[in-house]
Structure formats: C-alpha cells, structure tokens
Image 1 (cartoon, one colour):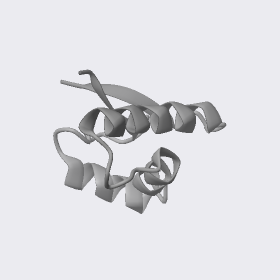
Image 2 (cartoon, helix red, strand yellow):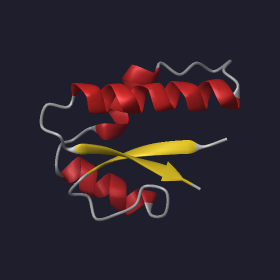
Image 3 (cartoon, helix red, strand yellow):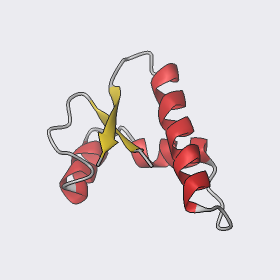
Image 4 (cartoon, rainbow, N blue to C red):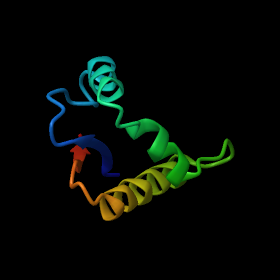
Length: 78
C-alpha cells in the first residue's frame, strides 16, 4: 500500500524522517498543516488502516486543491 504525507515547499525537513523538526518548522510558520489535514481527513477510531490511508490521501489532495498560495506538496513515503 502506497502512503503519502504532505509538506510545504519551503520546509527543509522530511516529515517521514524527522517529524519533530518538520512540525516545529510548520508551527513557527503558522501553517497548521497537521490541524488542517486532520480536519479534512475526518479520521474515526473505528477505521481500518486502509480507510485511514485513503482518508489521509483524500485530505492531502484536497489541501493541495484548495491551496491558492501553492505552498503544499505531496510526498510518497516508502
């Protein structure tokens, strides 16, 4: 199953490899990427891993679609 994450084009950290530094950069720049992703994904506690992955990818795609500043990008996680 292919998994994806979202980041901003100016964030020098990879969220899959160094989430803490990636998150600090995101917070310092007031992007609120995690909060926006969680709101759009609408995760539930009864979701399977595949459903959560699908919800996550939907939210990432939606964030990029709505991003008029073109600051977000989707990255594939191995």
